[in-house]
Length: 83
Image 1 (cartoon, helix red, strand yellow):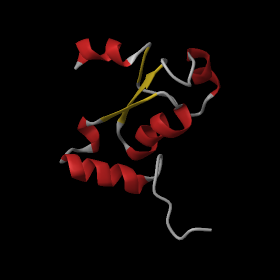
Image 2: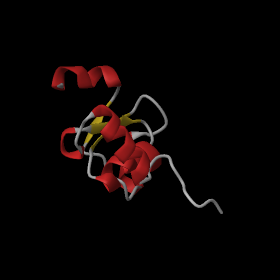
Image 3: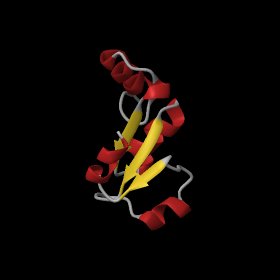
Image 4: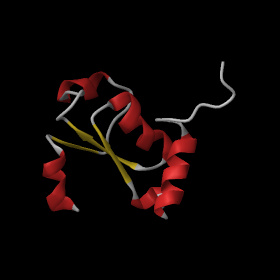
């Protein structure tokens, strides 16, 4: 078993990313197509989470998941008007 795990959804990768960007969790969103890694990264680390349905996850997956995104879009392109 490794002493340290770095990667989604673990806090260290999110903290490092926020620091590198000079951003805060409150003003940052994680965008991704996987509930159990991308969206969970946002949920467990206090960032906003945006699920895009252009990859792995399907709309029906949200109902059966314990991880719920803040927003859901069909694709990344659909997010642009909201930026």
